[in-house]
Length: 249
Ligand code: PEP
Image 1 (cartoon, helix red, strand yellow):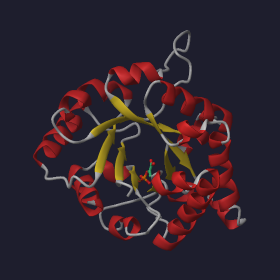
Image 2 (cartoon, helix red, strand yellow):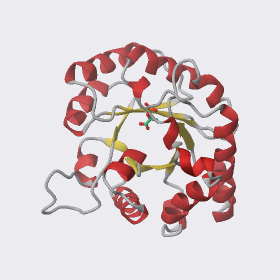
Image 3 (cartoon, helix red, strand yellow):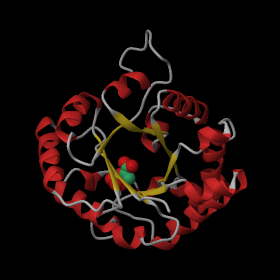
Image 4 (tube, protein in one colour):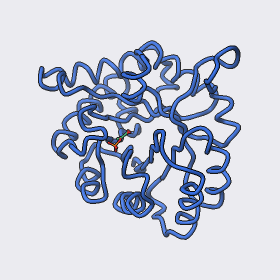
């Protein structure tokens, strides 16, 4: 049985006030114990979010990391630093990191390894562009991104990864994949996981991300191979995010 995970990625948005607001709302909300929730604010808010979410069931996540342990990397943050703030999950290979900051499969793979070494759970983001979908390359692209990381991992490390399927054309566009489109790719991911090890296909969580909102979450989450959501825009409004968390429980 895979426990659904709803992760809210604030990207470069939010404020200390919003952190406080979320802390208060989730302290009072009756979240079902059958769903896990994670909040992923920008780096400067991690300390405040750690304090605000203490005593709530909400886990803390980070948006990226540098794979090096320390050194002359101005502006970067290591896995061990994130762990010091109680971070449990870290996004790796988000399409914005891939397209805006040039993170290729090698860079993504190094970040997954570094996160695992620090005891963090990497949320490996994979997804095709509209052009790739229209050229009927969706599965090849998505499975290629998955294999670039999984082929290099030891079997016991593979068990510790969360996967997020995020069609690039659906991120921040308001254009959500239909439940059928999403389910088809999730099923392909799970078949590939089964080829690594049947147990991986049964236990690894594969989240959907791409314009998930309070009014479409339930039908996406009802698909057999969708185990939660990576939510961008709708995670910035506490009521909307709570409603998505509740539809997963
Ligand atoms: C994301 O940033 O991963 C995302 C899915 O964003 P949005 O929900 O806004 O499409």
